[in-house]
Length: 210
Image (cartoon, rainbow, N blue to C red; front, top):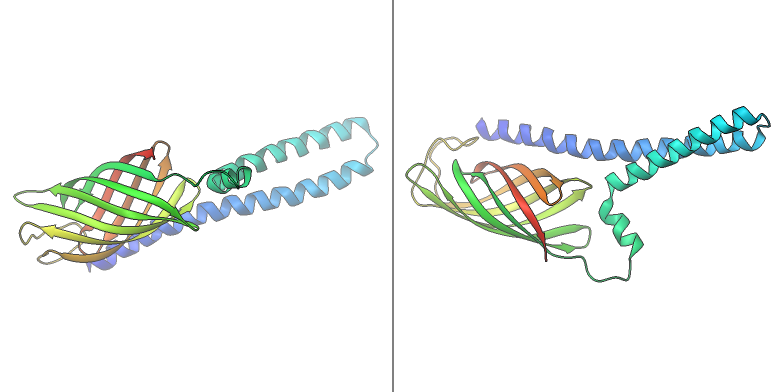
């Protein structure tokens, strides 16, 4: 039951991130269509006062469109400006948080591969009378400032444990799969997730471009 609740909570969170990104795209599209209509009206308008009002509205809409596009896809904008430039940098993330009911310190390395970033994580967590070796691989898809991802992790518990958040029963060392979602506020990031071997995962970290 705890696993189901965890998946439902995380799914709602990831859906909200995706919906926010799509909403920005939709808003930009509507404004672009409105600008086109206003420019057509402006071309037919002779009254100077009305022309000034229309032009001001058009300029305001164009500024909002530019701002929305920057928020939705900063990475795509950067690639469009410099398509023949050097390869996108790798990102090292030094982070701390919670995994397997223990306090986690970890390092994560991500590198661009097509539309995603892929990489791995290595960390160590300390709980009440137990510890965890954390190692895994993941793929992350950017939604602008937000991101979602899938991970496969090995959690090496120093002993069998109980009361892991969002997991039930006795938890032993093993491999699990999980979903993560978060937000980047350069140079910082925060994320939350659910993993079948580590339960609730939540952390925040500092991003270093390599």
